[in-house]
Length: 345
Image (cartoon, rainbow, N blue to C red; front, top):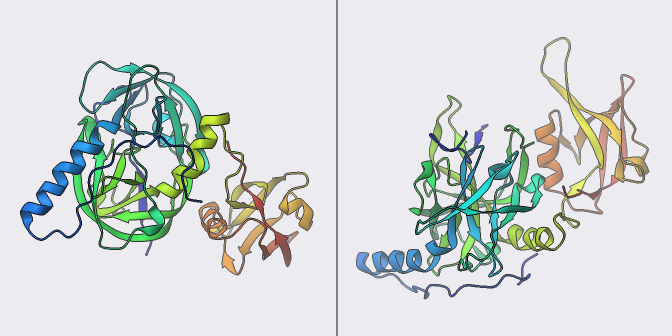
């Protein structure tokens, strides 16, 4: 079953349209709830978590629209989605408590993983505490915090519905699209404007960045099916963006080629992914692949579309050797390729 996935940066009426501590300065987390015995206990837990974490969640306004962000450290760095800031010429941040917008600057973007970091100076915004998304359990209660439809400081609740998803978003304006690995699926309501916000557990730790919602195929969002970038990815990528403005170690497998979609002339259906150019010395180059080869399968999985190829590669490891089935001059062949690493933006 195929799901349409919708990016959630825009807002109607908007302004123009490896784990382990990697350098975050943690804000005090909400006290752990432990066993929730009554409805009152659960309510109290919600109140404590919101009070502790919401001040670390901001609204991001651009000349393209609106989204959300999470304060990453005490130096004013804020994590958000790349698609929230794509193509923006103006960036402003509004704290969840309100007040005047604060001018922000773009620090760096990792489009392939739909992550970005912006920075505000002298705002004294409290950083969030980022948890370990690899320890999440299906059924665990979470809260989604952000600015859906421009409603700053909004909170919804739900559970972890699944972990380890691979989801792909399509091109949207200046944003080229992304494939998110190990995505966290949640039933917490996620709406346009929630992108870049916080998915939070009851101990006050951010375990994901809400990014996508499933669509019904008729243009509307599917209720209760949303996806978040796992905090493990944030903690790997954000420090790189902060230190150099780009990602030098993505940890993502790649063929090291530029590609384009091909279609069957007879049926008009997707018919493989054509190699437009090959990075010299990269994985494909070392294996003897060249421009105009059409990639049909990788590691035994069909790659008839660019999305399929991205999702297959997302499940593989840098340095892994896999069979790649290609079509060259009308003839099919299989080549062993030692995968390279996806470069940062």
